[in-house]
Length: 336
Image 1 (spheres, one colour):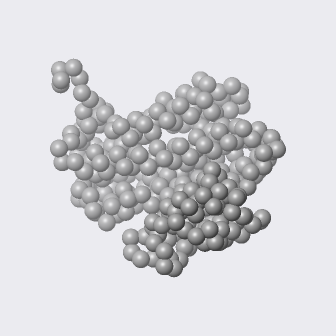
Image 2 (tube, rainbow, N blue to C red):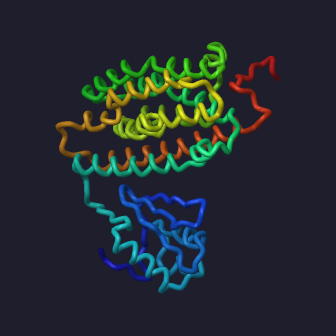
Image 3 (cartoon, rainbow, N blue to C red):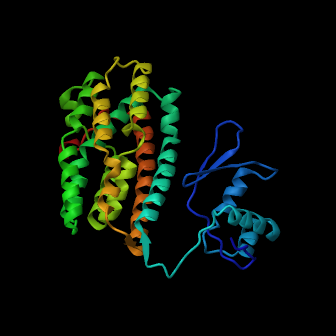
């Protein structure tokens, strides 16, 4: 790795940070690599403030002036990142990316983002029972809406797909996924809601935003949509371990034993169908992907990750409020 100087424009590779609640070292995650950041004098917020200027738009000298960190210290941090291979290395002449390299990088990145989704305070708050039980109920309700949206975004992907092989693959995917919401609905009925309440429930805005974002990706970028399946089919509640954790939490919150069994059966069905392998199947037999398509797919995948963050934030915000209707109601003209 080339060392940087004061006029270089360093840009950090995409990473995520896990800041523990108690004074352990901060964890920096880049793909499948984990780095522990030890604190030596400087405050964490000062380091994170410096990190945000490692965006390829500021020279080392400018970062020093903005952050009031000496040029020598900034350069030391930048070169330490460079030695670890953590700075972005651009190859402007690269027109095609080998499929094998693309798949490996997508796997590493989705693993990183899935891990970050799992670090969201919704999960730790439910695990520690910091939220009222309605937040847990709301989480299952929004999971119902999440599953129920499958036919909408898959059919959008099919209708805008120009590749016959990919269209067949997506059609098979739709056939396997279009009618799974009843499993989450039956779990909610076991938790005390009526079938009418579940089926007439209105998603919170975070769920609508997630669905609309995925539909937009499906409309404009089939490769990106296929990459996104590796994220939304592998999130915490879509794994056997995650589903079993939810079963345990349901009982801890006072809901009936095995109330989530129908939802867990949906997870087992998805795991058996190997829907996280759609991207590999779509790219089988192909050697290269145009770099422009790869860049667009990665950006869309990253946007979906942030949609998950808003989805989880919205669940906490809405279902923690004792004044809100649960399930959420639509507002009609006569309600005005």
